[in-house]
Length: 233
Image (cartoon, rainbow, N blue to C red; front, side, top):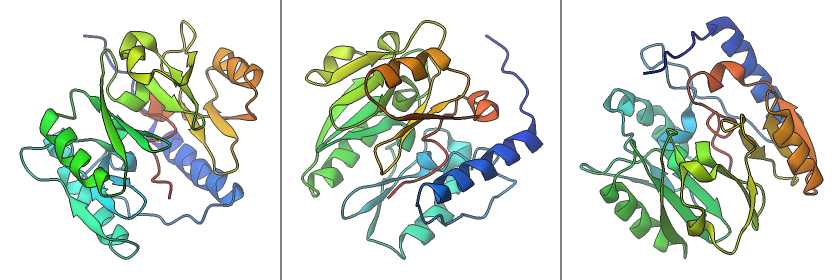
């Protein structure tokens, strides 16, 4: 097994603060959830909930040691909209959930099981959304392999999922050597890309996207990306 590189915690904290400032500068109102040193993965808040149009789905993370992260997120979201929780034996990480228009692709991964997909699909159908399961290989989550750039386009690592699942969408293939490239679409349509993936940035710029970069290198060491660190509503 490949040894995971050590994370520089102070640098990670600085990157997290810069991420928050980036969202504020982009016009988002940012609400912070208090950190909990007992849950070192808690910056990856995307895994704890999925916000749909009329309901927030509180997940049941596939890693049992992360399930304590959902309580504070549930309490915060309950002040904003109705909340529904997934139940045992379901497991589902928000990093496996990718919405493109009225279709929600859910990755079947090491962290998300069939029961989790089925429970989520039943909830999503109440919002008029169609759920499509997608296989995940070689990476932790679906959104490590596939990222939405707009309602017609995804950035994809075809060796980590089945590109046929995304038929009808424009597929931009991640370049060799940049399989862990991550991208975050902001509400103005611009796309922020991880700073250490210059070829990907060039591809997206050539495809017509307004592209900026962000250094999330410490979070990438933990298989994280730009979508992981927030719940955008």
